[in-house]
Length: 295
Image (cartoon, rainbow, N blue to C red):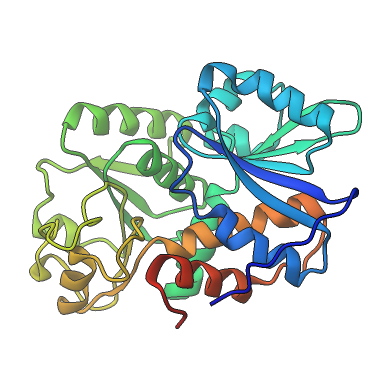
């Protein structure tokens, strides 16, 4: 178990995550051990902030000298609309999850979500999106971001599946306008048929299904094949029911903890300007916090 003893001084720097709700956030659990391992006099906290007050709160935090802020649901889109200075990552994602406070009082919004997904795929499967046939299950906020990331990174094709086809059709139209040379298709059923799933190289599951042990698998083992990579963005369970089905079908499967980890790593790199963020310290802290053990 990671040591949780803190000491503070008059020069302690403060980082935070803002959400609504925010009690479930893993960010303090992974960032505080990292800050200590980096030898920084700093602490990372969590605050529940009503989205109607977000921009005012961020301005006040800048005035108070906060060192950096992460944003989670539902603040990412609010910040994207309200923060004037946006990094290219935020503009591409259409959302903000990392805030930098500049000395002139200006706020700068970044998104580390795409980076986190890219690194998690590379780490798990030795590849990300370039040249891959990608299937995205669920076209809500997380699924949309993943599909756009795949498009931006040069996927060979992107296939979309959603419980309501209208949402998948809308995202497909957006992607075709953004990347006219990309092949974008919408699955004809939910869940998609085996011939549609087995043709994919990388499958991303972005819905909430799989957060409970008794959830049925979204796809059966016959929907997978050897050589595929399956990433389930949920992380409450080390092995979700659909991950188990994917493994039985011959695919490699991981949950979403690595994606969250690398999002946090990138935020710390942006805030501190350092390239020695202790990834394994953060990984161990998260596993200990979520699963009660490190492995």
